[in-house]
Length: 331
Figure 1 (spheres, rainbow, N blue to C red):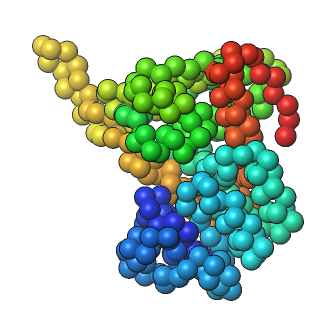
Figure 2 (figure 1 turned 90 degrees about the vertical axis):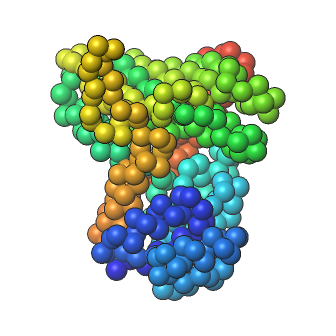
């Protein structure tokens, strides 16, 4: 039985707590949060102990920690957990600073502890199946990947001001997915962005509508389109065109019923937002993490994947602001 401590008992901590509650080979042994009410509620829901952060990290009975706290706290928690010899499951981004992420990587490597960056979309059943089809050369050689990601509505302005911006907060998932599907790292990036949804987002120094094009050394292309607004629901689609065909993963709808009448054809709405849309992905990523700890096999995505996604997000933000093509160097 893998004993796991959850650091951060907000929305994502509750998701992981619920997942672990349904597993037979792992359990939530302890929880910690700066808000005692949140920690107490999750402790009751999972049957875990409510501890302070330092005590949880240094408890010899805890095998691994989930870091679901605000991004600004990740750096210190990763260092503390690594020094305590804990396996680490960390929500993205590892940090908003590439240099600080590199510091984390050095500490993780020195401690020799497993570390997983929680890019949950890699574990979405449809996206994972699509990637396996690519690996099996079902569509021949990949030529162009198209990723569409649009939120139903923008987050609060207070969140926008601390999130690192649309490229680091929202598109970072798609930048990781691009690497996952292309099978090689991009060497060139172009980006453009606007503020079309809410002028307050622009006043906060961010964008709400963005597009990025990536190019690999072999010439493969990837187009990513993001928007903070989709009037029709949560929009998450991928299309991959290759030399022998095309693969496409469509939106997930509330149900599969389609109405046809004199007014036309109507489908159900899409899943409302990420918690519902990626529920299966959250379960699958945690199952992967626990299984890797049980068997001693490597976890993925790695800390290096988190670093590379952050570097791409930084390059995209810079390219959108100065209009220049960015040549990308290897980590």
